[in-house]
Image (tube, rainbow, N blue to C red):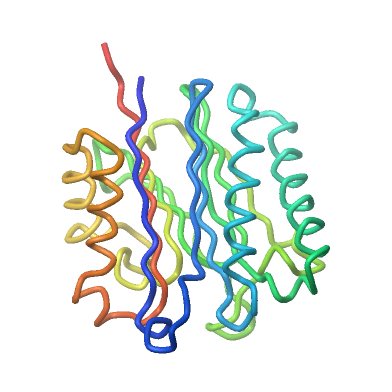
Length: 245
């Protein structure tokens, strides 16, 4: 068993026009027989959301990397919650928490287990690579209005954190911020797009190294077609488990 993976974040046109940096972040940790991947989307209205997103993605990935052998146990969920709380405390020493608003979505996978976690918008999608009609989705959670969502920096963040164990037949995963979700998946109901996710998966799985996959994903997110659809920042992470003889 081995993992292929890749990821990239692209600055949206709305930020480029204003000279702002990308406020999305992702982090991937591989080792101890498994992999952890996180995507975080910083709120455009928050002054330091890029730092909030980067800190959260790093801290959660590192924390769950130490839980790979016990992802179905309560200790893994506690490690996730502690990492979020530790990030809140770390950032609160630098300024008001609302300056660091960010969402969170991610997975932690081992040979036998897969833990999915999600707070706010963005999409987590797992696919059975042998049958693309067989998939599982963690949908975005929006507030009272479509453009509002939930952040780890809010006092009631625990109420918005969703965690579940996914069947191991879902060996291919896509994590994306809402900018990418606007064209990478279909909604109502949420489902894979055969004209995007399937060719992306097929192409990435043929590439031999992570750097090449990262570059391919970045080129896709920076394409003219993607830019026409959304002016938002865009992040996509792809994780694929391979069985080896």
